[in-house]
Amino acid sequence: MIGVVLAGGESRRFGSQKAFHLLEGQSFYERVARTMEMSGQFSDIVISANDAIADNFDAYSVIIDEQQYKNHGPLAGIYSVMNAFPDVDCCVISVDTPFITTEAIDYLVNQYAGRLTLYRDDHHIHPTIGIYPAWLKPVIKHLLDNQQLALRHLFNNNTCYINVASVPGNWHANINTQSDLIMIKEGERHD
Image 1 (tube, rainbow, N blue to C red):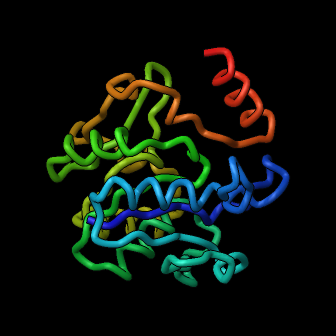
Image 2: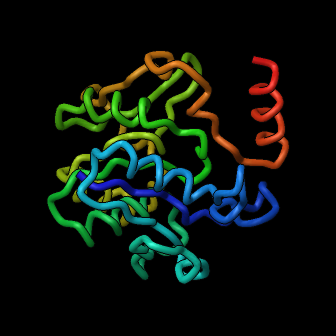
């Protein structure tokens, strides 16, 4: 299994490229990738990125979305990584979850049994914190070819969902805006 940091978004709502935003001296992408490394669960860690930012990542291999699927969102990133690493399952964590912990990664990997495995809470599925098995590659290609770009098109009765509450903390917080980040930081100070 490989670790994949999804960093191909345009970060419009954040106001600058989230992947490189510094948090406690580390960029978001470094925080996610290093946490994946510290978990010791993966044979390799790669960054899925668009070609506009691909040259800005240090110490990690970068997989750029395939030409025919550029600007097709996270589904294209996952598919492009699967093409680069055939027959290898992918643990995907988006760059906008910089508070991810080794405990959350370890728990996810330990629950994995060959099915699409995702975290969820009482209100939302977190599709960019999960394990995408290699056998999904042709299904993903079909969705991309038919412009069905939402990750939710992969979810079915066979999907394994893990409640985020299984691992304590707000490690799953998704940072889309600067105010999201401020709220999380303030919440940490009050806990």
